[in-house]
Image (cartoon, rainbow, N blue to C red; front, side, top):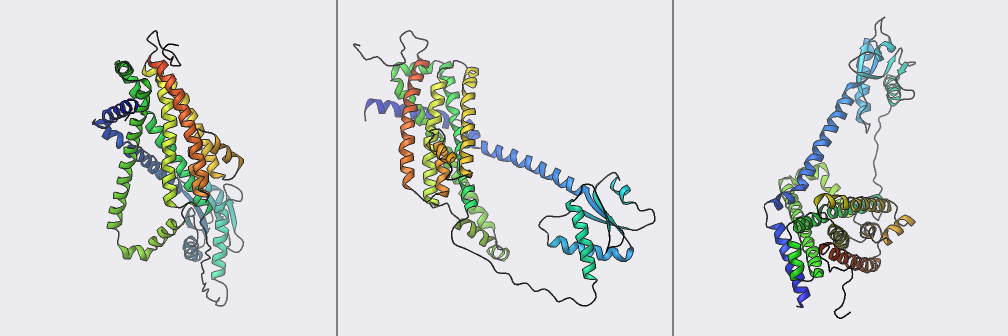
Length: 414
């Protein structure tokens, strides 16, 4: 092994162990749990708020006592056939003083529509014209009239047939592509940002200057980048193991008979059969490679820019434009994932900083595999170029306190 590679791996092992062999690394590993917990808490709060708002709404029917039971029965039949639950039905017994307009203004509950009068020619007062609540009340009156029709109507005995065709769902493949874009973006943004904070700490306690005096700065830069990549891979491996363990535990707790009875097993099999266009194995493998390339691109930029700052505040100010730029690349790649084959998608796949995300999305919708070899070569070229420029920026930033630093290394005797 050459001295350059040996020094690089020494720095990589040092940075890797400095992060992993600490109690705080466990909190870092469990950070997604806090994110998921906060998301679930916010979702539950929003769901309860929406449920309470739906529960406060009502539709009212002012009818005779002879029609009340028929209206409730018709409401039960209609709700069973509707994909979305209508507002709560309130049936009031008609009185001479019953005023539909006054009922809509009663406090304590939102009244969307009020129906009164004979069922064959009802009067419907709506809060909004042509609302769904008014149409439902009209449908309810018609259901009661049909149920009371003279003569016995023939019983309906429908026969259902499933229409299936070959191939996979385009919408599902595009959803898988967007999921790949989001996962790579989130992991890269979460893990690559750790490089800046570590560099700021070493610049503050002068450790980086000791490393610069002992080994070439190129070895320090590449070693740090490799060490942080190892931390990122360990993070991903930890959560993959946790996901598989959770899946096995959940599968062991389920009753197979219940799964077959409810049809959930069939739905799961159908979801798994709708695989990405390139197949699950290739899709997951190439997605992981694209994550590595995206991480190296962003990590190199963070290290090169972070070396220019002397304080944490300066690092935050310098890293903010990079983060905003990365969010822009995510938006571009997400738009490309929803429009495969378009000019926007082609641009996102060629532009170097969005190419890893956009090509991962393409693997979900396009069966071609050879194009990914070309994309990997293109991205590797840009990774090398970004690392080359970042090393020079890194050298300039680390040695800025000395009088002999140069952006370009000057050969001896020159």
